[in-house]
Every structure is written in C-alpha cells, then in structure tokens.
Image (cartoon, rainbow, N blue to C red; front, top):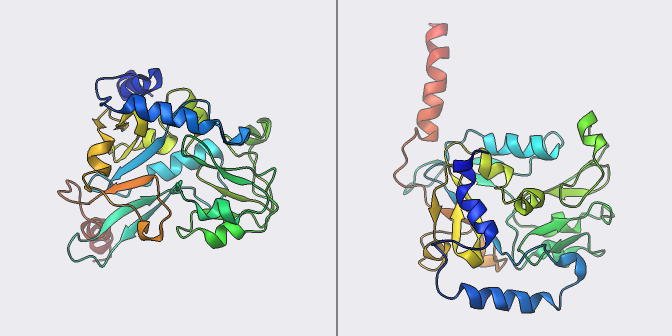
Length: 278
C-alpha cells in the first residue's frame, strides 16, 4: 500500500488527527472502562471500534475485494468471505452492485447461538471465529440472517504458503474440515495500521474503513469522511437493521453513479459477442 493510500489510516493508528471531534475522549474512556468486564480473549489490542462504510455509488462490481480477501486468507473455493451481489428490482435506485462481508453486528445472533464460544465479539467491534474451538454444529450459520458464514464439509484445498503458517484466529488458516469460517476484517492488518484487504484493493474507493471513536473512515484513495455524518444524519442504511442486530457495516445509497449500471455493463459485454455471431 502506498504512503498516499495509507496516510490517514496511519493517522488513526497514532490516535490523532484533525477530524477527531468533541466527545472522542469521553467515548474512549467509556470504552476503556467497559473492557475491564470482558473475557480476556475478547479484548482487542487497542481501544478501537472499527466500522465499515460502503459507497454503493462507487462500486462497479469488479470483484477485486473478493479476490484480495480470498488471496490473503487462502479462502476455499465457493466460500468467499465478501461477496458482491447485483441488486435489481429497485425502481427508484435502479440496479446496482452490493458488496456483502460479515456485518460484525453489535448484537450478533451467531455469538449467542454458539455453544462453545468459538465465535465471539471483540471489544473493537470485530466478530471473531476460532476454528480450534468450533465443533461444527452450524448453529451460527442457522442464526446469521446475512448468510455470511460457510462450512467446510470436506478438507479444503491447500497451498504450500498456507500450510507453512501456524494457525491464528487473526487470519483463520490453515483451513480445516468440519468448521465454520467467515470474514474477520483482517485483524493483523489493522494492528499494523493498514486497511483490510478488501478496502485496500478497491480501485474505485468504494469501501471505507476506520475507527468510530476517531469519527473517521478512509478508503484506498486516502479520501476520508466523518463517520458521525453518516450514522447520525441517516444518510446511510444497514442491511436488515430492523432485526436489531446492529450491523457495523453501513451503505451509502447508489446515487449519481459515474460508471455503467449493471444493465449497461451487460449490454457492453454482450455487444462484441453479438457482432462476432453476425
């Protein structure tokens, strides 16, 4: 990642910046106090509260986020941790592309459903998945309304690079048979002051990521926004938030797009084939 793309995220890592608004110190103090009552495995390295914002007006459906995530975490085939869906049937917005990672809910039904504590909520907002504890009951899959989890029914294919690594909950590989896995927002990269792989690789700058306590999110182009302007002024929406899951992934509406719509994109892709057949 270039210095330009990392600039603001490094600022967040140092805990400062011009976009920090009044009240951050109070929030940080409250977060620190709340950590004292949490199980040790739920404590994140820093007092952070990570949040993701996806600008649907910038997503062109290229799938680079999925490819980057799959490459970094050696995700088994057909079990992508972040999927990009084409949404149709919306007369007001038209069709658009929607990336869907794990929502990392603040009220996660998957965590309540796990009988062995294999999936748990960290103090920084990330819902983790510990494959060494997972017994393969799949209760978490049944309870997740976002279909953001997958199950390894057989032994996944491996690469030499994957097998050389010691297992860690912060990267969830080597993968194994009989366990559940999902997006974990790249905790290793966050500790190094870097964006998650999906956000870092998005050439459109559609995926923003940052610390809610610092009130700022940034994308791969170094563009930043105040998170409070998104969350408190209701300019964004969350998927199925009426269920009370409190997702930590927000979406900006697909307005004023500067790329071809899905319909136009399909027409452009079909045109050469049509001419070739003529």
